[in-house]
Length: 232
Image (cartoon, rainbow, N blue to C red; front, side, top):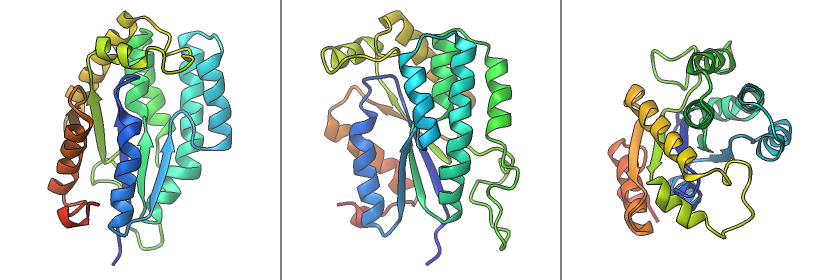
């Protein structure tokens, strides 16, 4: 059986619990016979991981930060995401462009129009998703821009996220931001969801781990991408 590639991103403020469920979903798809590429942003390639370390650790202004993140994203799309989609794999990505609009846009207050321009430039297909058969793994109407088929948004009050993160590890440059910063980021995610409602699935991340996982599985079963009997 030939599978079409699926590109799924996971979004939410730090502490929302994304990482807890990405591996479980990867296992569910693998149990269903799918090949899974598990990746993250910033990161996913040798170059992008170097840029990630700079973004998370070095002081810089919002424009420099945004440019580094989009540079990492382009390398990630070219070297990992697009090839995996062409092979018919399921790409599970811990954050993608929605995070940039939420963190650099809403959180840092950077110009959303500039971010939208960078998004169009960096995620342009330019033949990356073309194959000899003429198949295209993205949905009709978005062939020129590579973006997720589905975004799972872990919606969690910033105050609760801060409690979860407290003492977990040495915070990076983002995790160490005050709660007001994460309130702005959370607002940025809500705005992004409103403008891209067709691909967003909101998950109430304040519920128990089992409840959150059940709601995630429900989304994929309803879309027909997983069958209930296939879920381990």
